[in-house]
Image 1: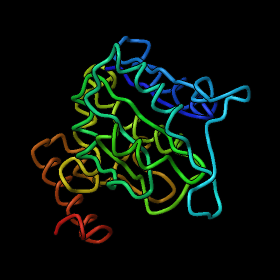
Image 2: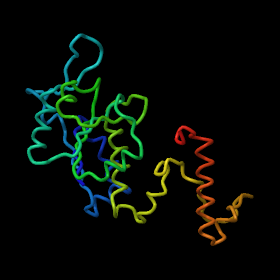
Image 3: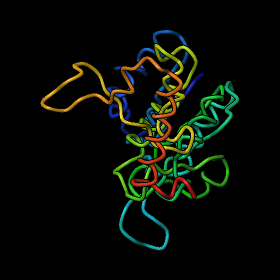
Image 4: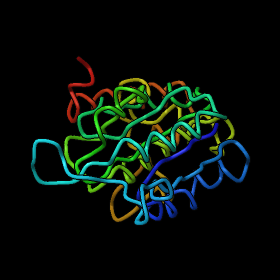
Length: 224
């Protein structure tokens, strides 16, 4: 998988992709991430990438031309399965979307900034708009990192145990059941006996019951 990211602050994305699972995926050659600085395509002597809104109002808007020039250049050699814009008014991001995106070959992610991007870029290029929650960030970089992390960990070979991702919360519309590790006794609290019984069919039954109970209590909307 190849992921290209357009940002006006590319430095924000350096750390998330240089550690942990994402780094492992890159080192294994299972994915590649390319971060593009929009300011390199800015207009004029000062590399301008934003301007005031038509109609007035506070906040700057990322201009059409720098974004279009960069996107056109990328598209001249890469066929993208999706061109994604990170925006608070996009479709709420869920595990099912991560699953679908993990099957794609090439993704382009546009990180907004200031008041966003000129609407005409959304009309002409963007195929998918994603929100990670009902709140506003300074820019789309952190949101992009969240989405990309959730996608890359699903690629075959990235996780040490590929079945691990299958038991994550939301994969089957349920929250994950409680988990335990050693020691078996800790400060008066014990691991449930069923987990040390060796009866794996009963363990899976217990885990399902726990997941269902936890979901009913904490996220009943997932069961609707």
